[in-house]
Length: 126
Image 1 (cartoon, rainbow, N blue to C red):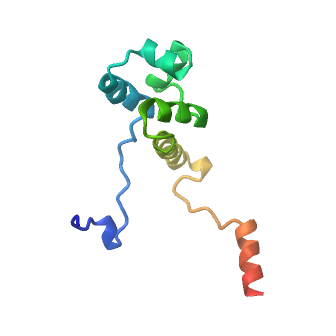
Image 2 (cartoon, one colour):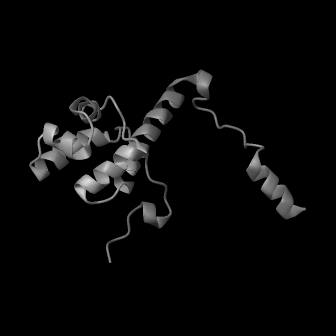
Image 3 (cartoon, rainbow, N blue to C red):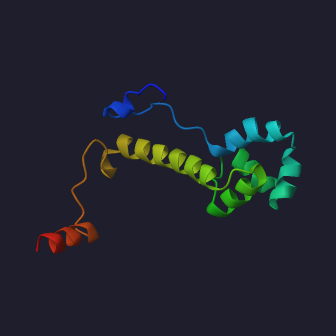
């Protein structure tokens, strides 16, 4: 059994100041060289244009669910990994934008929503 980390001991994990790596960068620097596949060949196998793949590899485009399915089949590990990488990247950048812009709620906690969750609570208590 691996040793317990600080996070598993009930302490919250520290937020990283470094952004997560864009999934296209991982594809470019790790996956394609590991598979010994060129960008042109990967684009052909993924059934996308070389330009589309290049936009992902350069970090100018994200991984869509459809592209995640294609990459999952291409790499052999399924789409969930690629979606998770893109989600982590997008979430980190959204948090940074909100933190840095006081007009968007930076530094303040948002009030609880009064939508569906509040309605469920009223139904349970009533």
